[in-house]
Image (tube, rainbow, N blue to C red):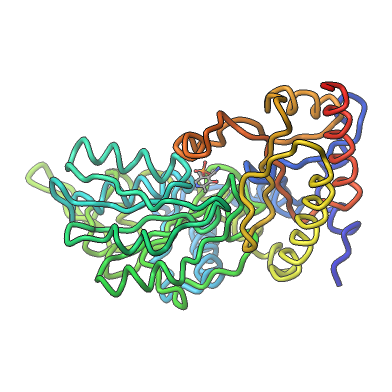
Length: 405
Ligand code: PMP
């Protein structure tokens, strides 16, 4: 059974006071708090099992290597990848997408080729392609959105041309909360023989993701948004693509043999993991995934959906409130503005009440431009949030609106 009090006990930071008020943490879209088991695991590893992996013959190094590979298998199982060598550890979603942009474009793209993204992408799924545009000459095409903040699929199909090389879209928007119909997008793209990258930074912590069922070609996510440590990310890539793509960075375990005459590269996944990997945090990501599975993703989604709908209905009563992202198929993110109140003012005043929300453009400036605004106030929920916290938050927003009247 889902016992919210027991879950909250797993997160000691929730006992903090901010300006003398109990912390109400609603900035989960940016990063989530960590359960005790993850922090304990990091401490335990540094105190008992810290040694650089892969290159050591000694016991500690072998133990750390073994645990790292076990973590890879946990990630493989979590997203149901076919092979564990299709899981590449990076430092986050951003690095995962940069890796694909750099390596995929070098291997498969030429001047004038096209990459399709959507109007609701995070900068991490826009800028790497623009950087590559300066090198290989690829160009971006953009799937538009409707007034609810949903992708317009008919327009998507029209964007596909003989020059399209990849479709790279977010599963869930970090601003609008929209859950995109990625099954349909993948299906349409594949019918034209085009591979698809899914930015799952905002989805894997809320929705079960099965990469074989989806048949996506790449998928990226960050550990820190799924109750794991910062500094670790995952890139899933189908073996057939990863094997054909050149390395992204050089050094460390990614080599086969190095000589000044020329260097050969290691096999997957090591070909893409240059330098000392962040093995401690990789192993702790495995612990975080165990935690999520022990609570149950379905249970987490049900709880967060309840908070989303309860909070939305309470906020709707506020005069002059505007929501950004009103799709029926939505994850637990609420972006809004009230009247002329600046989002920064709202955020700063909520902070004085102990309530943490995010304000600004949320690293989605093209989306802000499309919406004709500079930024929003964004509340986003995680497994440990409560109905009482929603009440405190809505009460806080109401008080601020009152002060501005
Ligand atoms: N994509 C989306 C949809 C995101 O929400 C984020 C994080 N806000 C990122 C990419 C980038 O993730 P990270 O900063 O962990 O690399």
